[in-house]
Length: 99
Image 1: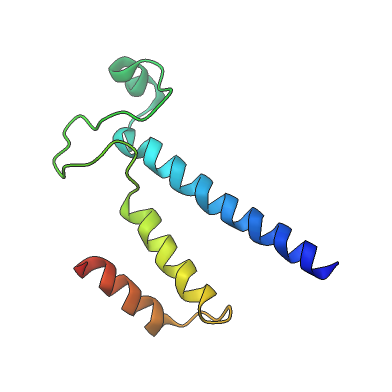
Image 2: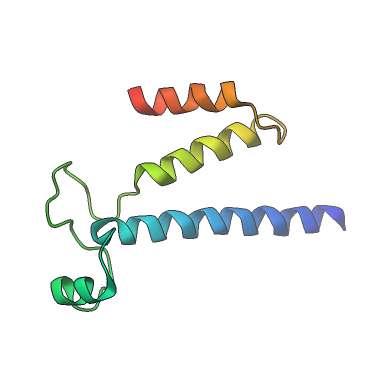
């Protein structure tokens, strides 16, 4: 049964990453605001909303650089047999910055 356990853990990990990305995307337009400020400006938030400034042509539901960085690290670790290799992570982050 080790395979079944490994699959459950993989599914849980992927679920956690997905939850992280969704939370990041939902919170992007209200980052740094208090709950009172959010309610005053947007009411009850029950879906994706546009940023007030949208100075970077953000698409509602778009993830931030925080999620992009996390995904670069996860990609590096998963393709490197679980090893953390700063040079590999740096290369992926560099590609992200320039891509």
